[in-house]
Length: 109
Length: 209
Image 1: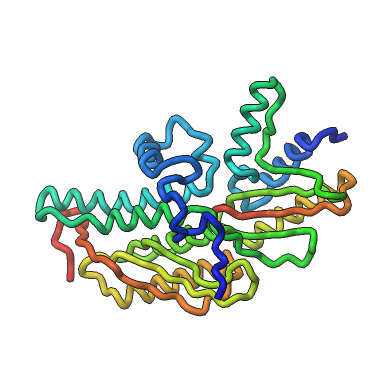
Image 2: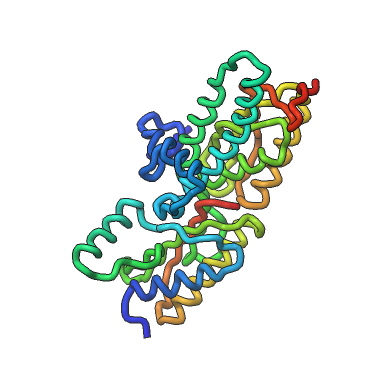
């Protein structure tokens, strides 16, 4: 059972990285936000977010933001579709039936 | 026409061009010199830094050839074209606008960044001997699917190359690359050759003409 958004993001990160054509995950949050959260985590001895994927509750919906680099072997839209489908399938499997997923490709090749 | 640029879009005069996700071009150049070791996660996990490193490597390969030739055969060369291309790199690698990719579900939003698309244009340039891609711009409302977009590309040509032929090859390579990896409706690709430079082959022979 998944107990936190961090764990959810971790699991989702593993799923996305396994999608054929995905080369890497980039931080979905702005760099300063990411660094800031790691500083806070270090100062408070809490676990920083291990995955760059952001999973958050927006109104009544769970929203996942995923920033990826693709390898350029397969067409980028095809990889984005596969990543989006994998993310939606996973989130729905956790009970988030109305989850929203954003996949952004930051580099190709 | 509206200007749909985001605040960090290329060409925005307010954009600090030397800052690429917190790194200067000099820092990225040093990282390249060091063989990207020890690994810096801040650079390795930044698409903008990765695009900049790719572009710096391309320019470095060309300029090294020139410097070697200059040392042995040529009078000092005006290297302002290198500065122009490096300046273009810092402008072009930022993420810029998000260009949508179609998806039938309203629950899934897909996009590719403007910076990634410019990286594709530069990669297309690698397929064409005789030209080095400098600055490129996407003109039009790229954030609205189906909009008509004009692409402008500035290049430097090797002396002695058949420029019209090379430009045609570049146009074909860019068209193919963007058709494969984006859903942009490109109505025009305007390529300008801004500079020329001499190249030498490995044996140091005179450039062919």
